[in-house]
Image 1 (spheres, rainbow, N blue to C red):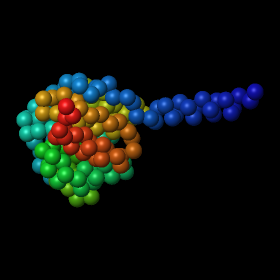
Image 2: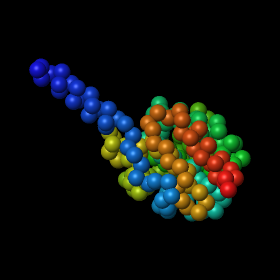
Image 3: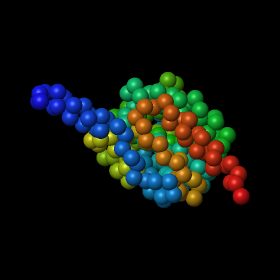
Length: 185
């Protein structure tokens, strides 16, 4: 048996494990942890408070690793393009990150990203991401790419954790629409 191929195989498996998104600890039906955080909308600072947003309807809370990174740029643009669909369903969107916080204000207003259409919040020390088990394993202290849909009563109704950014909008919008769908008798 050759040791190098075996070590290479072990390294490949370990890399795949570390690169895959973690299973979110907060499951459907769990109570969403309350939080408030410094946030930006179109570059303007304010304090975002989850409980206030839930008074208006469901909340799509999406964690992303850092502004001005390729996947996060795509995800923010996709949420920005779909924001009217979320509003039509009575939902609000908030992006939260623990990475590159000094770039968040600019990111919130740039048309190729958020375009001022939804707020993004700073998670200094990844305290919010820790409560939501949305930490990026391969970059300690940064947020993972995990999206939650939270119903107005504060319960988690949908969780989607995937580093690939392209399906988060579709997943969360379908979950928001399902909140309004009539329940089968």
